[in-house]
Length: 200
Image 1 (tube, helix red, strand yellow):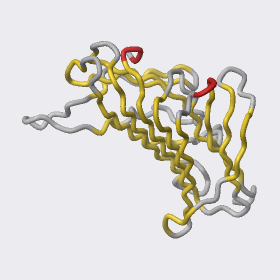
Image 2 (image 1 turned 135 degrees about the vertical axis):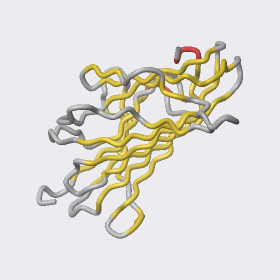
Image 3 (image 1 turned 120 degrees about the vertical axis):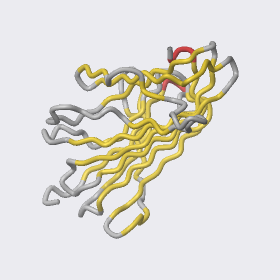
């Protein structure tokens, strides 16, 4: 399945919609290249939020064919096990070795149980060849502090820490970005995390 593909580039964006951190939107773009002929791609991710009876299946943004049907579609239900999530994507055709395909996932999520952990984290299980871009959009909370952390994939020991300054997106919101080249060197993981004053 996903072992039939390597990730060339990846872009992840997470937005905290409300000041109480109960509503979230995210978008994840992957440029993948087939290493074996395959029609299916497996997306694995984690969600730390809780309290929703039924979690929605991510939206897969896809071009359409001549009859108006999407070229790519999610096959089967969202698989949930603890915080782990798995989605199987039917690409609509067999992707041959060396061909590239772009996949775009959009998520709308709720955390009614208050278990969401304030970070956007990527731990590549396979090398992302070129570029990993992480973006977080946050309310302009008082005392907001945002950091980029590089950590070891196996032990999660922090190797590098850097404070990120935000830019204004619209009234009351800030955007924080980090671009990482050759992100899987030395078996590294990457995350943007944040804290803010408790009165917000």
